[in-house]
Amino acid sequence: MNIAMIPARMGSQRLVRKNLRRIRNEPLITHAIRKCKEAGCFDEIWVNSEHKQFGEIAKEEGVSFHQRPAELANSVATSEQYVAEFLHARECDAVFQVHSIAPLLSIEDIAGFVDRMKRGDVDCLLSVENIQIECALNGEALNFSFSSKTNSQDLDPVQRICWSITGWDRSRYLDARLKGQCATYCGRVGFHSLNALASHVVKTEEDLNIAAALFPLLFPDTDSYARSGGGL
Image (tube, helix red, strand yellow):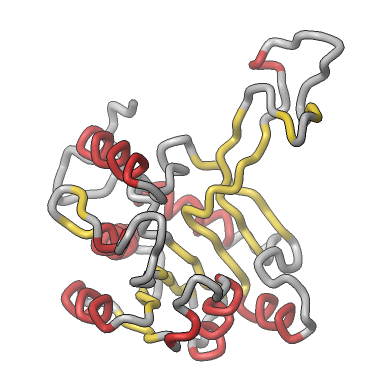
């Protein structure tokens, strides 16, 4: 059984109540729910939040609601904690965390990600954006050399984890937690590439404005979250 879990806490700090901010007159959380439903690859869809307002939205959209403890919704609680709490309560083979703050993620992106996880060769699947440009960390070159200039198209891409969608094997995740290991990167870790738009995550007002401007160009049909054939 594959479960989609859409996390949504009310107390976001950088962008207040970000999961309820609207694009095309609908909250981000609602777009995420409808994309998961339209993708047709989940046995169950759950909204995971401490706040009952998200439960009301889940009910309106015909999906399930998991009310996490309030202490797992503050700025100190980690994603590992609320994912583990959810998995202890819900039986499944794999859980897919679909972030509502990735509003440019399409149903094709979701379905493709789930298909990749179904191969069964990874316990954790991370969504990444491949960035093929010179990248450095703390002043050190990562994928290029200071001794020569290489054309960008010949560089090894750097994989930026975007968290738009993540997949975990339930038993492997909980086993890692039980052993005191990092469950977020449990077992065999795989990377699934998304384009720059699907990788765009809303954390600030500027991020939201960018997503709102691009949304109608990507999804011109208000009844579908399928990627527009024209692309961008």
